[in-house]
Image (cartoon, rainbow, N blue to C red; front, side, top):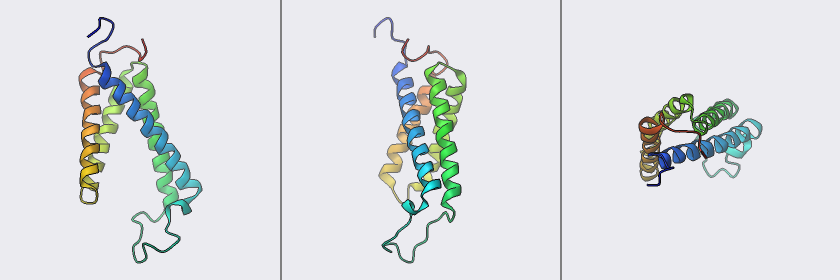
Length: 137
């Protein structure tokens, strides 16, 4: 390892990129759900007889939009070396792991992959989040 690289920098960079990408995607998804709920419906009737679990997509759009903003705040704090981002990132990863458990019956392999990814984020922030400088320094 080079002298200017701190231990765990890879884990922190991974956590930062994951939170940044997830935040941007959730913001886009939230805006689509609030503004154009028809994007999330079945106009051709392919799912006839099946109802969407969430009846009010606009409400869930706001929830996802706010969740994306929180993820971006965590990513920004991680990039600056702040403890707020460390703890917020761990909270986000923990909640995301719990949510993925609910999807295991429908998508077992994808759910397990995401649980593993979020476990890596959680570990990286827990083990190395308190000892790093600003990303890029």
